[in-house]
Image 1 (tube, rainbow, N blue to C red):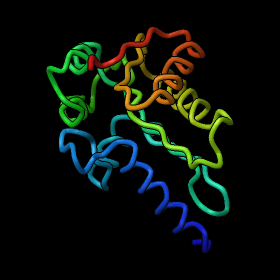
Image 2 (cartoon, rainbow, N blue to C red):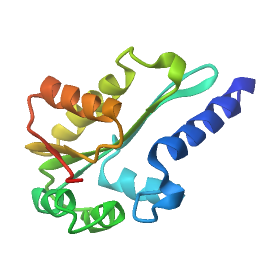
Image 3 (spheres, helix red, strand yellow):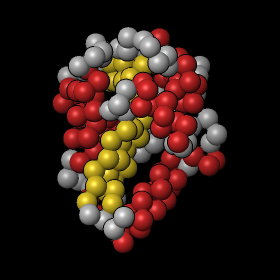
Length: 162
C-alpha cells in the first residue's frame, strides 16, 4: 500500500461519517465486510471506486432492488437497512437505489461520481430491466447528482419523502 493510501482511505471514512451521520442513525446502512459481501451477491457493480496512487478519491454505492421495495422505502414504510435486507439475492430487479457517493474535496466537480454511478447502473442493466432510480437526499449536491444520473440514463427518479 502506498504511503498516501491509508490517509486517503481515512479521509473517505471521515467524509462518509460527516455527510451521512451513520453513527447517529442506526437505520442507515453501515458498510462493513458483511454488508459488502451481501452487496456483491446482489450485483458485482454495487460498489465502485476511483483511485489514484494515493488511494481512493471517489466512491459510490448503488444497488438494484424491486419497485415494491422502492415504494416502501420512499414512503418511509421501511428504512435503509431493511431495504438492503429485504432485497432478494435471486430476483429480477427493476429499480436501483442511488445509496451514496463520496468524492474528496479536491476532486469534486469533475463528474467522477456521475461517471461511476452511470457505469455501475449500465452494468446492472445488462442483467435487469431497470425502470426507476431512487434516492434519499442528504445534500444539495446529492440531489443534483441523482437528477443528473437519471437524466443521463433517461430513467425516472423518485425521492424518499422528508
